[in-house]
Image (cartoon, rainbow, N blue to C red):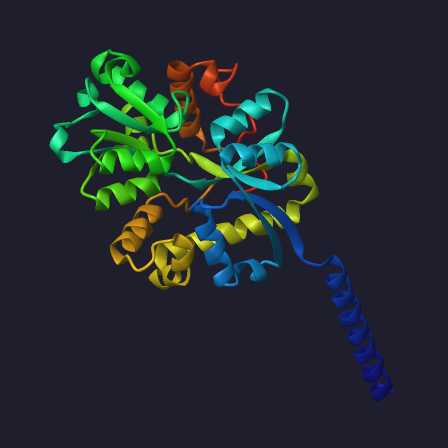
Length: 331
């Protein structure tokens, strides 16, 4: 009798195991499509995630689609061509105020800063008066608005009127500052890394300017953005991706060996100095935790941009929209 019972229980266990395996197989991988800039530094994290097998560990199947720039990514998201993009919290807030229910989870604290030629005699932002300033983007880009606000605080003046600003793409801005055609440049952090190696000095970061303007701590300027609908329909895949993203960030922050595995994606060739500079500057902006109820710095930053940039920068509302940061996740 005991032998018969043991055989029956063994059969039942095998049946349950087979059934469970069938369900797991039927569920399949957690699929998610990402729209990211082809040459963006976000590719470094994705490359590290793949190299370390963190995506597979979390059962992810990522469809990474290249977009030309941040605007193209935003269009792709709005057209529902991708599930997730990298964008900034101001754009996400504007979308929510306009009825497009986009939300986000932080990805990076770093966007850039002001680099200067040491020979130009620029000791503070106030000294930009009368100088030629190269700027990545346009007069309504967030970083320029923050720089203009800092200049106004220090001098009471208008930066656009007091300095000769040349706006352009990041590579051009880097050429202007390293080639001596500009005495200062406001550029993305990875291009500033190159400028620093060319002998220029980072005078102040965007984060430091925000702090001087009264923002309590560095806000998460960039994040993984997606629709509320995606958060509901693909919650399992999205959560797995965010977990994988934070796990990869921890590896990039603490393990030098990981960087050797993604060196090719960084496009540094055999330039060891540039490789180390980019690695160290990237690490300075890594987000290590997240709680949607702790977004006061973002609200303060939004207020600064609303005051000095107006509707051209923040849209019709002067307040950060509720739900800008996804409340369905924490780390």
